[in-house]
Image (cartoon, rainbow, N blue to C red; front, side, top):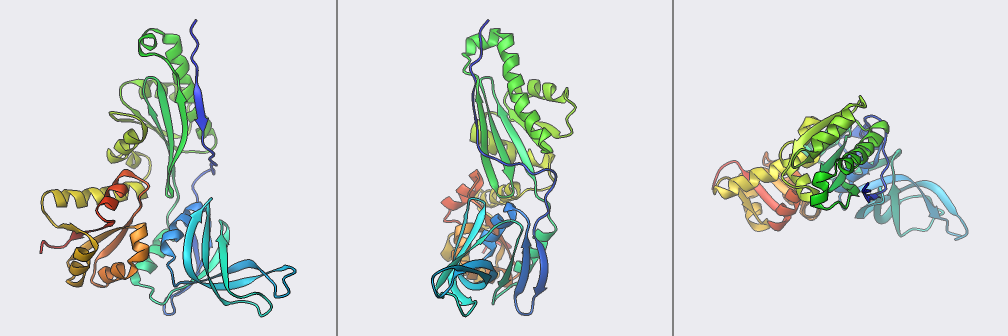
Length: 355
C-alpha cells in the first residue's frame, strides 16, 4: 500500500465562539467632538487604526514614570496623536502628553490600546460622516469565514474577517498525478485530512465555511463533512484555480455573500470594480490627487475611493468631498482589488457626471 506524505502548516490563530459585538459608544458629545469608546475585540482596533487621525486627542489609563525616576504610576493621560500603528493585535498611539499628573515626566508617550479597554477621543473637525462611521460600527457584528481552496494534490486554508485575510494552513499530499488517479485509498485519506481540519474549526465555534476550487474535490470533502452533521454553514464555490488567486476569484464570485450579509473585503472589491468599469468605458470615473481635488471643488464626486495610507495623509480631501455631498470609501490594500487601486495612486473617484 502506498502512503501519503502530508505537509501541514498551521498559522497561529485563535477562534472566539459565536458572534462578537463591535465597540460600544459609552458617551458622546457631538458639539465638542467627544466620544468615549469601549473596545471589544481586535477588529475594533483594526477599525480605529484608520479612524483615529493625527491631531486627535486620546485619553486612557496607562503607566508613566514618576519625576523621581524610581517607579511608574498608573493614571489617565491625554496625548495629541502623531503616530498610529496596528501591530500584534494592539493599537499603538504615540504623541505629546497634553494632560496628566503633576508628578510624572512629560514629553512623548505611547498609549497601547487592547481589547476590553476604553479610550476617550476628541477631534476638532468631527464631520457628520465620521459620526456615522462610529455609530454604524457600534451596531455591526464581527464575522469569521474559513475558506478551503482544494485541488487534487493540496489544499490552502484562509480565514477572512473584518481585519483582513490570514493564511491559515496548507496540506500538501505530495502525490504524483498519475498515481493519484489510480490510488483511491490515497485520495480518500487526502479528503479525510482536509475534512478533519474543517471539523476542527467547526467544533471550536466557527459557523461559516466555504469549500472552493476547481473540479470535484471540494464536493468530495463536503460529503465527508456533511456526514458529521456539523452546525456550521458549509458552502461550495467553483473557482478555476486555488491559492491566493483562487481566493480572490471566490470573493469576486460572491462566495462571502453566501455566508454573511455583507463583508468589508467584498464591499471594497465591488467599489473598485465599479470604478474600473466606469474607467474602461470612459465613463464617470477619474483618479490621481490633482484631478480628484479639482472635481471635489466642483461637487462632482459621488464616491471617493482612497487607500488607508492616502486617507491619513489627505484627510482634508475626504472632508471636502463629504461637505459637497459625496461619500468617502476607504479601500484597504490587503486584497487584490485594493492593490489595484494603489496602482492608480491610491486616490480615485466615481463621479456624479462626466465633466
